[in-house]
Image (cartoon, rainbow, N blue to C red; front, side, top):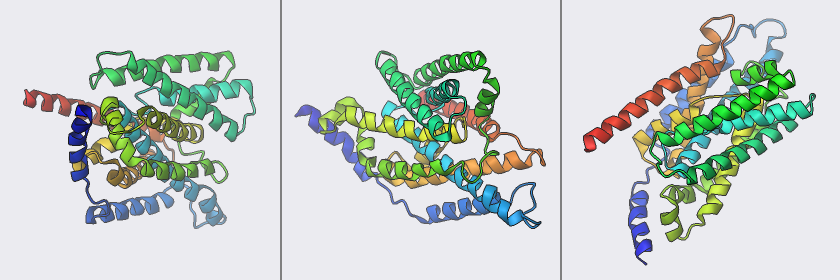
Length: 336
């Protein structure tokens, strides 16, 4: 009874802090992201006004913009769910090794089936992502010191080991070029017929929204969640499956996109608190806007060439990561 009363006391503020999602600010953000999407459609070297331009518009420009929006939502939501399950602001698929496990899955599929289809690569990436994320969580259970920095450091170390294994397998089977292409994380190869798997992300988003309240309670910790009647292990398993599905699809279609799942949930929570259900549309929208903006920069910074969007995203994400660490240390010092 004591545990339940404590859980009730802690969960009550979460209910009282629920905020409206569709506010005037959200409408402004929605219009801004829509404007960026339109700008993305008309950004590029190829002149859509020339002969055959309209056909290229539907073959490459529209698929690229849609894939940007879906990928931005997927990685941001994955970061949000992972941060809840680990109770750590600095955790996301690229700081837990999940994306590296997905890459290892793709490499292993290529090694076994040199002419592997996109479906086979995606399946391998999803399965390895799930295994890798579960390994991270199991490893985390054995660690006694779970400070905000120790947890992502463990994930980065595990990711480095997995990445080294991927490189070794790539060298053995002469696939280093494919591995380098995957690590680039570029939207340049996206075209009609190569991105449709990303629409599964819409289903993932819907499931996360349905389970939002349970994920919020799970974010309070195993003891409190269990006292409130939640099957904590089941929610963690479902959350891991959703993360693996999203990351595996993104990894097989686009590649490595660092720090997006770290930046977006933290920015949203700074302004709106930690309620998952009301924040989910904001997180999806911010993820879309940030990745579209980074892609536009990547296409125009050295035009007519383009740099991988992961380069722009990684540079901005690393800077935000450092600022978040400094902010937390400053807040900790002020609390003392």
